[in-house]
Image 1: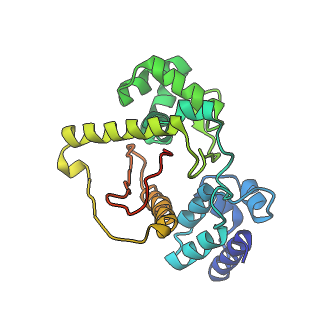
Image 2 (image 1 turned 120 degrees about the horizontal axis):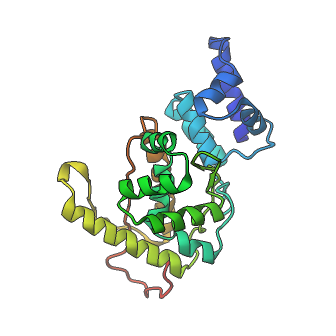
Image 3 (image 1 turned 135 degrees about the vertical axis):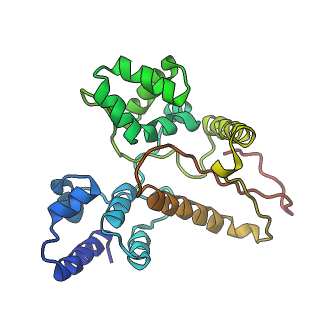
Length: 261
């Protein structure tokens, strides 16, 4: 069944149990307009992972419904509705952890307070700089990069995520992305040294497997990341965290590839 038909079925089931359940109420719980929800249901707007997660959280759907919806949305890799693939010159500006940490910070109640107390972009940048412990000049550059990529915009009183989705593309060689991954690893090393063990979780497992199943492993990791974020973002957004999962061969019978991702 198509994703939009699954949404309609779920809504109809909810309304049969409670006639007061309306598109307007569901949209309000999702944090979007009822018009946008109508566009999704009529296929005038694509059902992205972002909107699907909002829908599942708003109606507190059981895992069976969540899995059915996610399965219906599944398509071959790089053809999923994750938005356009970013060009390399934009990836260079967004490659490491900083721009996405900033994008997440813009959704916290901390930034909401900053936005209400500071009316200008310059004043907000200074406050963000203090909170993220990054130079204000770098924050300005990062905001510009997010805006260029269509991921955030200034709307007159604050910076807001557009919730548009974009990707560097899966399994596409990228020097910028490789440098970004290295920066992520350096950040992880810093956190291991400086964070209390109760505030972090680093773990690893070793397994044996058939190398031909690598694509299955990578899909499982992607699905886990999305489900993890969907569940953890249901609460009050008071802080920004990063989850990193490392998966790589230790011993292989094949000739190693020289192509880096």
